[in-house]
Length: 126
Image 1 (cartoon, one colour):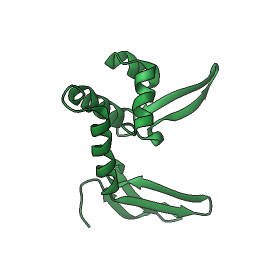
Image 2 (cartoon, helix red, strand yellow):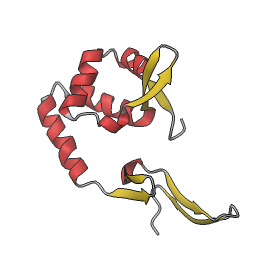
Image 3 (tube, helix red, strand yellow):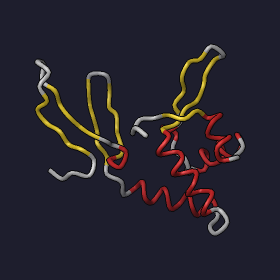
Image 4 (cartoon, one colour):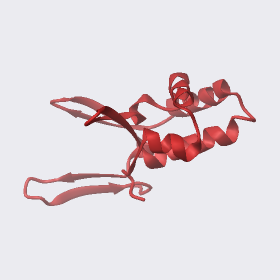
């Protein structure tokens, strides 16, 4: 699976047997980050997709732990983890975007002639 493969909301709900209501309750509680809900135009209006690797891993964790830990406690744990997360911040003429370092697969800069002048792959130290 590629690092940027997406899964539709419909396929996610079917794969894990969870309801629309549960998914959005988890979002409101902070169990699933807002930025993982990617809206795209479709012939019928809008469709929601998620980064497949991230959302599947998170849903599996929630389903595995929900009988042992309350969803509120789980949300607090994710919030604490995110507070300690390192971020890559990119500032352009169009604004600022922050990426969690754990989500970054590769960072590189390319010169105007197409030559790559810097490469950082996930897990590598520079």
